[in-house]
Length: 84
Ligand SMILES: [Zn+2]
Image (cartoon, rainbow, N blue to C red; front, side, top):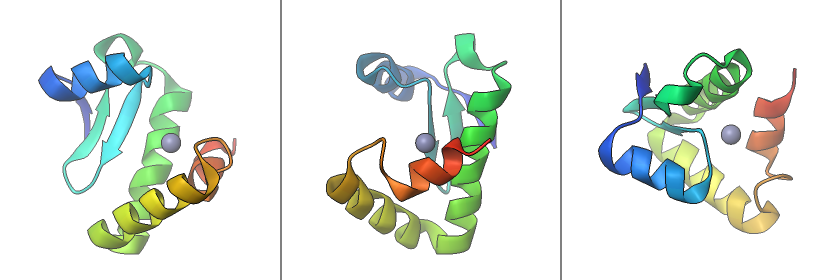
């Protein structure tokens, strides 16, 4: 499910400064030049597990709600994905 980000996804990542994005149910998209980073890959796989627990709608609903409420760094799903 880990894929190289291309076209619009790549453009979006470049513009926002992120290296990867998890887009259920499609997959995990990582910039070609960051594909070998194990920490990044593990981070996105935690998001994939969150999606598996919550389902597609649950994942996006919770993610967007928390994003508005907490921003990025304090976002509980991001905090979980950042644990070593
Ligand atoms: Zn994340």
